[in-house]
Every structure is written in C-alpha cells, then in structure tokens.
Image (cartoon, rainbow, N blue to C red):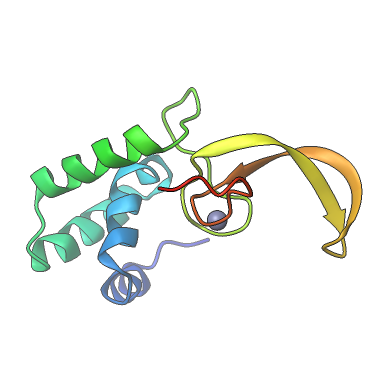
Length: 116
Ligand SMILES: [Zn+2]
C-alpha cells in the first residue's frame, strides 16, 4: 500500500491517545518512518512528549507478550496488543472446533479473564 501522509495524519487525529501511544511503541517497527513523525507530532499536539511515550512503552512491556524481535503479538480478535498466547481451537463458523492453533489474547479477550 502506498504511503499517504494526508491519510495517516487524518487517521492520527481521529485515533485515541492510547492507540497512538501503542503505535509509537509496540508497533513502531511496522510503521513507515514518515508515519512515526506524523504520530509523534500528533502526540506533541496533545501535550505528550517522549517521556510519556517511554512510560507507556514500559507499562506495555510489563503487561504484554513480546516476540523475540521485540514487537508485541497482536490479539487474535482485535487490534490491541496481546498479553498472553496459548493454544486454542480454530473455530469454523465461530463455534465448530476444527484444528488447534496458537491464539493471542489481549486483556479484553483473555478467556481466563485475569484482571488487568
Ligand atoms: Zn482482543
């Protein structure tokens, strides 16, 4: 997909601060360098500098599950960072278990429902 700064800027302005902080930290390696600049500028506009971003990264690191390359796993059910991975059943039509696969769970989708 072609990088479109205007689209990225509009998207950043409409994203939650938490979402932007996640992108600047755990998903940063997956971003275009120009997108990192746009998101950083949007966070500065919201009064959040590098210290706030670093604090966020540390919180996520303490709670999240990281791959060996330092990037977090994404939840299998939404866009939040996963904090646990385990075997689960891939379900056909949402209910028929067909084969086991590794699933990643964020705090909201963790079937064990551990408190955050
Ligand atoms: Zn989730």
